[in-house]
Image (cartoon, rainbow, N blue to C red; front, side):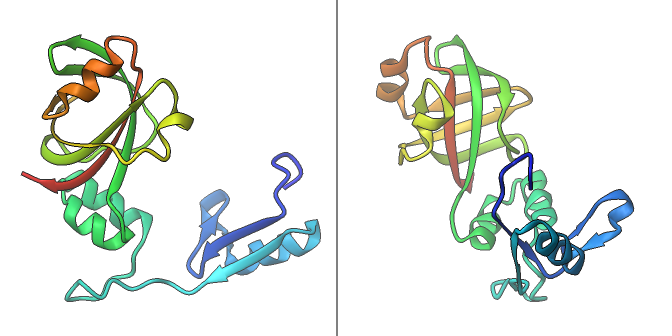
Length: 167
């Protein structure tokens, strides 16, 4: 709290932290009280769309992304997953991923919205243009956003990709 200047924290009821996950939500509340940090412990969110009504968790979202199930991720998050990547132009519509700000789904083709900018702050609130992205390892190919890509030329370094559906 001191280093970050935090005045509040929010966690789920099943939150664990520390060595061997020894700390839990109650521990965080106690530590917060000692340091003047308000801690809110939220009830777990259940996925009404799933037959088994699993709890929505970051682990579950990551698992869905690993499988390329961006539609279920959309339902779990109540919004499309946004992948933010720093890229270097290779040729035509191909770009090489230099740095990932977060997790991308499994290799494959996806209908997406793509926004471009020169830094992550600029791209944070851009709705993007509809396109198709093909992911393969550390390369992505963008189809259908030619005007957007021409606009940034070879200088654009950040893509924000909202993954809508897998094709």
